[in-house]
Length: 230
Image 1 (cartoon, rainbow, N blue to C red):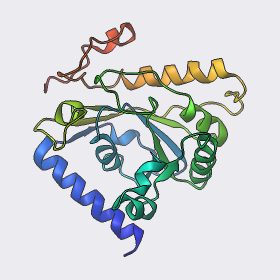
Image 2 (cartoon, rainbow, N blue to C red):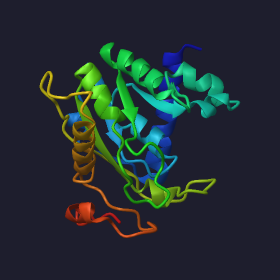
Image 3 (cartoon, one colour):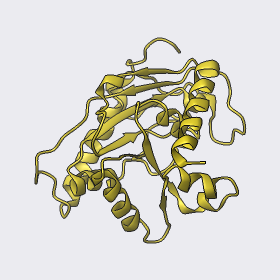
């Protein structure tokens, strides 16, 4: 079976499941560039995030996943077949960035979760700079995306999803002028990562009802951005 067919089957299956059981809704699909290299960044609160994000942007995307997942029985052949990029622990970040940069330069859309891992509380963590580095390496725009509802549907420790609404909100692409980003300026990289991460939470959405702590001060401006569905 060709990887393209496998990918399409996966997309159709996930989309049908999300619509049937989670009232899946996508806002801002018109903001997604239909072609060209793209860095997609999204908050990460549940195992449901990657499949939900994969069916929401209207074009094929490539994810980054830790190397250990490639060793699991099903994923060791499925991930390579659909173009998932491995991230090795202990110095593997550069290899991942180079691989992702090559894919973006070839016109692919690559997804990264700025926090580097799922939020254990349901609330925003601290963004890392990898996606900004990719933007600097490739001159590609960054597309901010916010997912809501997935934490309540499948919080950490859950084996099976629970009923609930899942929503994806897509913002406008963020561009930098040529030479504006300086890979050697760590403070600038972090400041730009923080800026994009803030824009994610300015998109329509809501914090999890089951969140284990209150929103941080940086999120006060978006506490009332829920669409009223929850």
